[in-house]
Picture 1 (cartoon, helix red, strand yellow):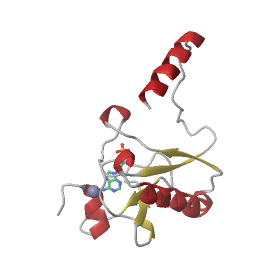
Picture 2: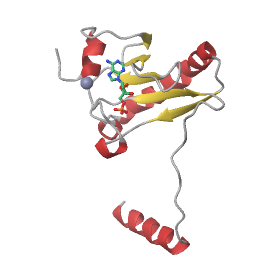
Picture 3: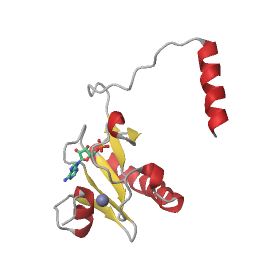
Picture 4: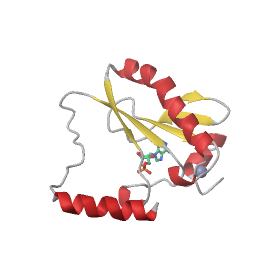
Length: 135
Ligand code: AMP
Ligand code: ZN
């Protein structure tokens, strides 16, 4: 058994409701769904988050999202979804094994998007300059 719950799901040592699998990628239902059909897409190999996942593998995650999205939405009667990636504890990451959330959305389902804050144009300009200097 690994310390990582998703690694244990990959090996089959922990149970899951799998919806898709290939050589590199696994998708299974989230145990605490925000809505029906809430699915997690993960690389089978362990990386702690999207930023340390090799680009080829990250690309396969996106390709898998594109491949399985019609079936997920079709199964639950949705035509919209949020794609979520939480990176780091403060952003809400709880499981430190790279994963995308596919979250089907419905009219008046009670969920909100994050709220934007009003800021001055010069503050945006300063932030943009700062970021560009660090690239
Ligand atoms: P995050 O906050 O992005 O790290 O999300 C982790 C997600 O994994 C949460 O939505 C949990 O409900 C989900 N989760 C944790 N353990 C399991 C499990 N054993 N099977 C399926 N989903 C899980
Ligand atoms: Zn893992």
